[in-house]
Image 1 (spheres, rainbow, N blue to C red):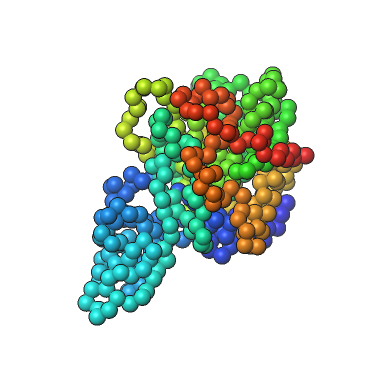
Image 2 (cartoon, one colour):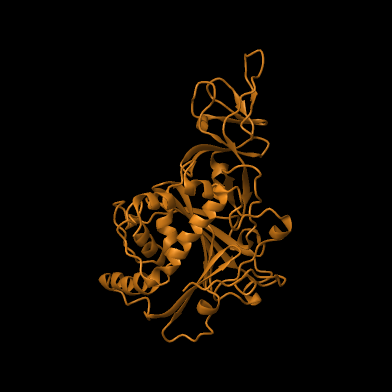
Length: 399
């Protein structure tokens, strides 16, 4: 168990908080790029801050503080211009740096500036960086940049803290029980056959590498050569799980909206054979919910809804003062310790793990090895490239 103060230190992400300072050293998706095709001005909330995302008439992206410096009206009603976003009330116009560049009627444009943050588009998502200068590079993870795949995005709001969701990714044992036994129980209540043959875990382990942690498991009846044990699931620090099967590989990105709300992105990537046409045009985006029509019931008949049940079932912020961590939770303990260690580095003025400043590290993309798809044959047409795995980084076994 930990104290409330220690739990707050781990979970709260508002401006100036211990973990908020860490999370602001990373780029986070704020919405799908296609959202601005429907309306070029969008209010967004990220890391406890209310902001206005826009695309101006020159095609440039901007992310500004919510309110005009003149009379405080929301810039969500702003009008995109060639040189920025024009306030609806009196026409003050702000560029991407938050600088006022036009004050109609006034004899001079005063040197006023509001909050502004860098934004970039990658792989059909718009990412924002809310931290201090110098701004790090937006990581070009492979699934965002490949040209020989099809992609789709699912965005699901969660009424819980981001760490509720992330802890689950460092917990191999829940697979056996939440997805196995409970998933079969839900199917039985619906009159369906059990979707999963459950087996007990024999071993779990965790390896720290350049971009995060590998979670590995060995279950009864599996050989030790299986990829789940030899490679495992990569957790990309601080808030992304990379997981795949024979049909689709995905990033699961858990973006803190505020202390009690999270936007979950399923960024799905489908392989194609060379010469095959794309399955669809662009990157379709679907808004989903974990709830039934009553907006309160979760019928956990899919893996994602089972995970969501585990996340939101802990409450808006999990009360870790009441939990009792045991040996199977050593991945969670490792992750919490890493969060605190990396936040301490930020407090010392250092970069935390996974922050990229060298363009050579980022080009043409960052490729992460993961279970079941380690073979080059899964990505047809791609040239061999070095993987970042425990084999190329120092292995840290957690005992």
